[in-house]
Length: 605
Ligand SMILES: [Zn+2]
Image (cartoon, rainbow, N blue to C red):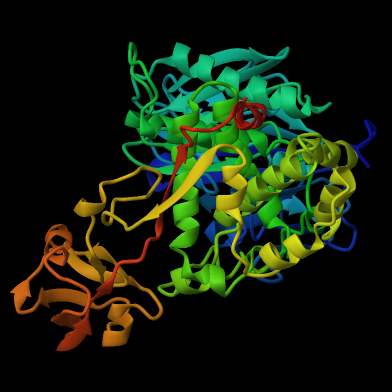
C-alpha cells in the first residue's frame, strides 16, 4: 500500500506510570480486518539475534470501538485477535519497561527510552500502512525539562519536543528508538546531511570535541560508500551511565551506551583507551547504516520478527563492520598507526584465546547466533568462535590478500563499493553465496580454497605472512594475567611461566572458575566451571592474589587445588603446564623498504 489514500495507523505512547515503569500504548486503525484484526508483538529486534518475546512485558491488553469494549483473545505468546468490527478499532496495551539496554525499553522518573519492537504491536496484514505516533508527556511533576530525541520525522511536533511524528510503515516505526529526558544535544553536518548526538547522563563531556570527532568518522565513511538516497538525517542516541557498553544500529540512528567517564572532559587532549573504544563503537554503528541496515542478507529481506532468521553471513555484516570500524579511526586520522595496530593485536588475541575456533566456523557461528553466540554458557570459549572477531580478521585477510595478489589494483574497499551498488539501494537481499562470488568477481582471483578453509572451515588465517607484506611484524607472547587483552609488548621475564588453563571470575567476592579450557591443567585435574577456588596447596587464595601466587610455580610442579562444588569441599591434584603464547602484538618493521611503507600507506591512509 503506502499510498496517500490509506488512513494511517495512529499510535500513541504515554509514560503512564513512570514510578511503576509502565507505558500505555494506544493503536487506532481505520479499517480492521473484517474477520477479526490480529495484532503481533515482535519476538526479536533486528541487529540483536536472540528471541526476546517482547510480548511478555505486556501487562494489560484490551480493545474498543466507538467507546464500547471489543472482545480481545490471546492467540499465542505474541498475538492477539479482536472480535470482528466494521468500525474504527483501538487496541490499548500497558507495557512494563525496565530494561536499560540498547535493545529494550525503560521508564522511570528520570527518563524514558524505548525501541518500537518493545512497545508497538503490528497490525497483521497492514504492516505497509503509514503510521502516526503521538509521544505524550508524563503527568507532572515528572518530565520537567524533558526533551524528545528520535530520528523519526516530525509531523506537528517541534524538533526535540513531545507531539506527533510520522513514518512510512511498521518496519520504520520500530527502526527509530526514542530517548526522552534531560538531554545534551550537539549538532553537526556531514556532507550536507544534518547529524546530531543526544546524550543522557551527567557527563560534563566536551560536546564540541565530540561533535568534531564524530563528524570526522562520519565524513570518512560517507565518502567511502556515498550517502544513501534516503539518508536525510542521522542521530546518535547516547546513554552515559556510570558504566556500560553497547550499541544497536538503525537506518537513521543508533542507540549507544558507554560509561560517562569514557567521554573526554572539556580541555582534555589525546585519545584515552576508553575514548578510543567509544569512537570505535560510533564508527561501528555508523558503518552499519550501509552494511546490514540497507545492504542485508536475503534472509532479512524482509525481517520475519516472529521467529529466528538464519543466515551464514553474519560474519560479513558484523565481521566486516568490525574491520572497518577501527580502520575508519586510523584512516580518518583520529588515531595513529601504532594505536590501530594495538587494537588489531587485541582482536587477534581474542580469536587465539577462543579454543572454539577449532570447532566452529564463522559460517556456523553466524547460523547458530540465536542459540550459541547470544546464549553463551560456561563452555562457550571451547565451543564458539565470535563472527565479530574472526569475521574482522577474515575481512583483514581478504583485504590484504587482494591488495597483494592484484599488485595494489583491487582491495576489499572495491568489493564493498560493488556490494553497495548491487545490494545497497536496490533493496535486493545478498544471497548466501553473494559475498564470496563478488570478491572473486571484483578481484578476478580464485578464492574458493580460502573461503573453504577460513569461512566454512576452521582453518587458521595467514595473518603473519599477510601483515609482513605491509611492514608489520606479528608477535605472540604469554599473557600477563586476567587484565591483559593483548596488543602491547611485555618483557618476557615478567610474564608468568605457567597457567591454570582457566579463567577466574568472582562470585560474592570469592574466586570462581568461569571458563575451564579444554585439555588445560584445570580440566585434567577435574575442576568444573562454577567451582569456587578456596585454597592452593593449603593456602587460602583471593582473586587478586591468584596471579602473584601462580608466578611461584614452574611447568611440571604439582599442586593441591581445594574447591567448593556446591556445598561440597574437595581437593584435586593439578599439574602445572607452561602458559601458551596466546597474546598477540603487532609492531612496525623498523627495516622496511619504501615499497612496503607505501603499500601500508595505501592501506591505512
Ligand atoms: Zn554490529
